[in-house]
Length: 258
Image 1 (spheres, rainbow, N blue to C red):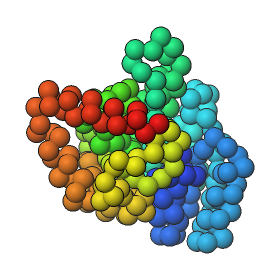
Image 2 (tube, rainbow, N blue to C red):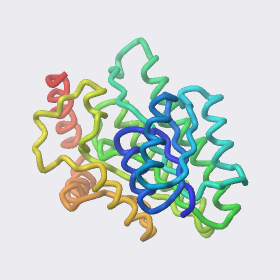
Image 3 (cartoon, rainbow, N blue to C red):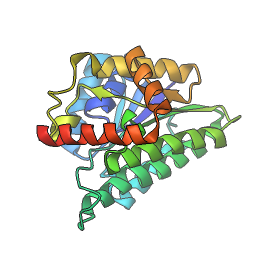
C-alpha cells in the first residue's frame, strides 16, 4: 500500500492508524478540521518515519469540504490505496430534544460523509483494481442507547453493503467495531468512564494492528480482542428486550459520569 487517507487522522483511533501506516512506510493524506494540528502531526510523522504526509483541512459537516475530500479520493495523481473513514464524535443530545442541531451534525459527519467518501473511494480503487476501505463503527451499534448507537448501526450495515457491491473488484471493505478505547473521545464527550472495568479498555495502537490484520485477511467486520468478540457474540444472540434493559442501565451510568 502506497498511500492511506485517514479522516480524523490527528487524534485517537485515526492517529493510531496514521502511526501504523507510517511505520510500514506508507505515505499519508490526513484529513481533520484544524490546520495547525494537522501541520504538527504531519511534521512529527515525517520526522519519525520518513514518510510524505499530505494534509487536507476539512470540516466534514460541510458538504463542500466533503466534496474536496471525495475528489482527492478519486484523483488519478498520487492515488489513495487505503481509506480509513474514521471522523466522528459522540452525539449527546436526547432523541426527545426539540433542537436537532447535534443530530444534524452527526448525520453529516458520520452518515452522509461516510456514504459520500466511501463511494468515492470505492469508485477510485475499483477503477485501479484494488484497495482497502475501513469504516470505523462501534460495538455501541448493538445496543440502543441514543442516536450515536443508531448512526453506528447504519455505518455497520453500510460497510457490509459496500463490500457486497465492490465484490470482485479487488477492493476490500472492513467495518472496525471498537469497544472502549483509551483515547480523548470519551473526555470530549464528557464521559469519564470510571465505572468501566479496566479489562474492557483497549489500547488504540493494539486495536489498529488487530484491524489491519483482519483487513489483510479479507474480513468484513473487525472486532479486536477476544473479550470484545465474546461480548459482541452475546449481544447478537440476546433477546432485544434484554438488550433494551442493558442499554437503559448503560445510559444511566453514562449520565451519572458527566
